[in-house]
Amino acid sequence: MSPQTLLQKIISSVLRKFLAVNERINLSFDAPENVLVVRQHNQFGDLLASVSLFRAIKEKYPKCRITLIVSPENHYAVEKNEFIDELFIYNKRELFNLAYWQKVKKTIRQNFDLAIVPATVAISKTSCLIAAFSDAKIKIGTKSLDGVKNNLSFVFHYPVALNWKKCPDAHVSDFILDIVRPFGITTKNYSSSISYDMDDARLAADFLETLNIKKDDYIIGFHIGAGKPPNRWPLEKFIKLIYLLNNYHPIKIYFTGTNADKDEINYVQSNLGFDAGYFLNKSIPQLTALIAKSHLFITNDTGVMHVAGATRTPQISIFGPTNPFNWAPVGQDKYFQRKSDLISDVDEEVVFNLSKYILEKRNK
Image 1 (tube, rainbow, N blue to C red):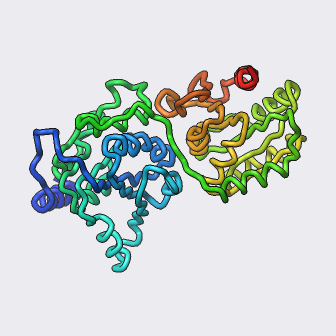
Image 2: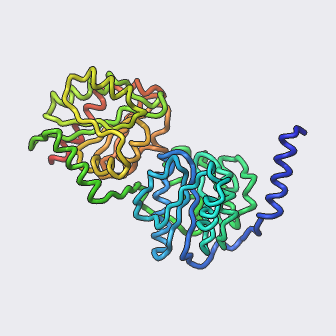
Image 3: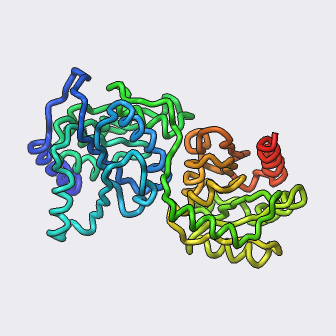
């Protein structure tokens, strides 16, 4: 046995001794008033897809209060979310700061009736331990994920086996509910939700004024970047699509992005030869407010795709290697295009024809 394996066994044994709880068989419990959800994965889209879980909890227990623990990387996905009563950003880099540790302790010990640790793409050991150290009377978490055992499942009164492989095309907002379905907690509404205020709406309106929009213009937004290179549709195809759209009907366009997308933005600015607006480095609520005022939004498979998915704006998401049935936004007027694992195989004519269909449908 290697020293590393031995150390892991010793740590597991110690944690089990002090944190293990008795597993319960009876699935019923009193309606909770104070609920803790620990969802501190780093993926932005994964957190936005968790909105169905928050909604389901509120639908089942309308009077309950939800405290959500998230990571520094993705907390902005649920800022101002209508279902979250308290948002706490867990930053493990600050744990050796005594004052910060006191904040963590105060947050997770608020006389919680129920703690839930969901999982979709991975099991977070940190999330399990946060729930374990909380004062929640009942703790629900993952027993295994796609056959991979959770070595910390002993901290949960109700460890639940999750298996995405049973239905590989299930949407993430549906699959995430499997952690609570055994307890009658579910919803028929899988859509995401992002709230914004009047200031956000005003900023979006002021930006649109700079585009000199005429009465019959279609307002179309584009997000041309993506954190993963395989998820980036070729910029040349975006440019060809824009010219096809402009030849079909007068349009005003804008691009969203951050400093991470500067190469793509610079390329478009240099090669488009077409007036456009650039809505860059804005907050998620501000971005949501702008997309909500648009006639169409076209995006790569990336975080902003999920932001647009939280609006009622018609949307086309372009996919490559990722399964769109798992991750594409759901709801009315939410469309995706995918041909193969190579996103470049999606033809701009196909996206144009779908865009025409969407825009013509709104005028009927």
